[in-house]
Image (cartoon, rainbow, N blue to C red; front, side):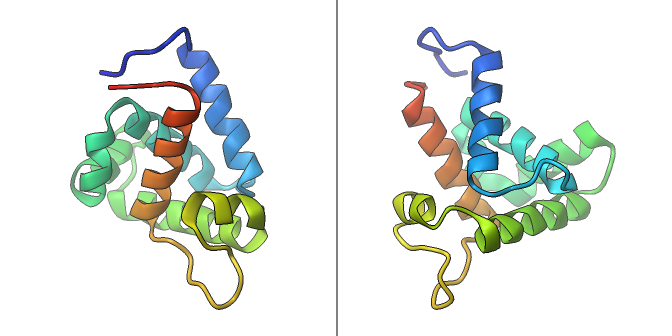
Length: 127
């Protein structure tokens, strides 16, 4: 469990939503909601980042009453849209490289890990 330094759950949810829009993930995508939930879960328990396919996707599938394959695919699609349309300078800051053609997009696990860690650090969350 994380210790929250004067940051409410609602504030974290808003921060995640705002940051996802800044990353270029449109809210109408199915993967937006899945990725948002994945980030919330990983911010609370960073160990999930190490077991995305074995723990995180199955947990999300149960939550949304779908399959882990559909969760993975929808999140991948949201990340691809983000990578194609998102803020190049922000990607450079987060990943150390941008969404220019010579670089491939990060994997789902990399993307989730980096964004969750960034939000944890930005909001002073420790655990």
